[in-house]
Image 1: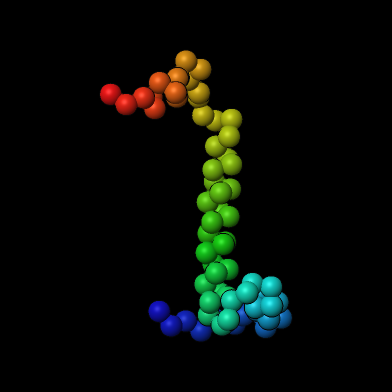
Image 2: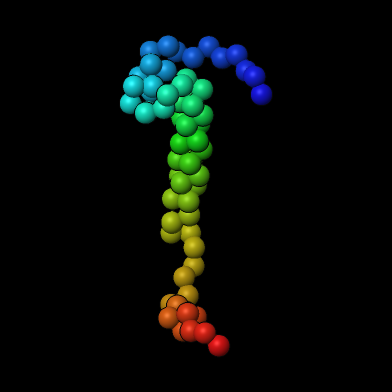
Length: 66
């Protein structure tokens, strides 16, 4: 999908320099991927302390083959 964006040229040049991508398009796509990944990770961190653990669960027993 073609999209015209007004991206801060200084930010884009910095991202190109430190990101290792060869094109502006690749740099922006990588930045969006990393943004999404970090937001998803933050969502997982919000779950800490909210899940109930089964202290009697034996993970080693679950590994055995039948």
